[in-house]
Length: 293
Ligand SMILES: NC(=O)c1ccc[n+]([C@@H]2O[C@H](COP(=O)([O-])OP(=O)(O)OC[C@H]3O[C@@H](n4cnc5c(N)ncnc54)[C@H](O)[C@@H]3O)[C@@H](O)[C@H]2O)c1
Image (spheres, rainbow, N blue to C red):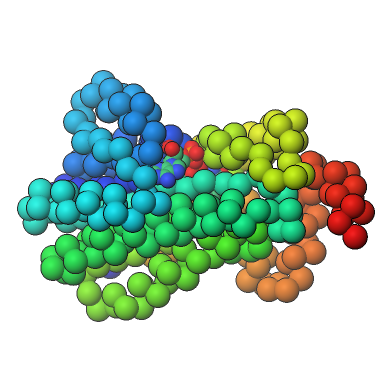
């Protein structure tokens, strides 16, 4: 399949104020795209625009909460008339994690809040820009799932649910868009050195600030990929119309393990996860379980 470049392209990036999204915005601009960078964090967007200026690129920034359905559709209504036939690359990157412990300790409101951003944010953005993509019969949708969208992991029920759903949503679009000139890429990054774990504040009856600090330290020591490298691979995948991308040696290990051992990966991964992350909940969970019973 012939590869494409980012010229004559508008890249709309969500969650662009930090981490992978920030690098996606800067690198897409460096590859020649006009970038519309969005995030709930406006201050971060202003800093991003300044960095882009210093690198010789102009960037349009827009404060946007992807979990707010009306705001997403208003944003698309404002942007679409200004696309003027440009090829659209929509990158649904905004995401949050939750530090709440096991499912039975996770408050349903927190679970819902996470799905609202990671899953509904992706669906709203795609629905809002779909008419433009269809009218052009051209473009690309990139949805950032996770390696936790390939295998389920303890203490991550809401996050895994959202990322498996993003995978299912994207693969459905992939089939519906067969034989069109609109492409999808579902991305499954392994641990990437960003702010995501730090930003996931402790919630619920078990998780404490001290456990959270420990978890942030473990994550920062074990995450293998830089956000710059993740963004480079994602943009390469768009150029090559690659429809599935797993990032990092940890991501590739888990991909292989979940495919070769679709049931017993649970026990195998548990050991691996426990080696990488000393379980911050262990003793507290035992105490809480005793109280629960
Ligand atoms: N870092 C990892 O190890 C890793 C691994 C797999 C997948 N991912 C996924 O990569 C994506 C990017 O995360 P990151 O690691 O760069 O994290 P990050 O925390 O550095 O960046 C996430 C960005 O999303 C923004 N955001 C949060 N809620 C939002 C909302 N409601 N509306 C708009 N923007 C919002 C934040 O303000 C932030 O700028 C996420 O979807 C995440 O789930 C990350």
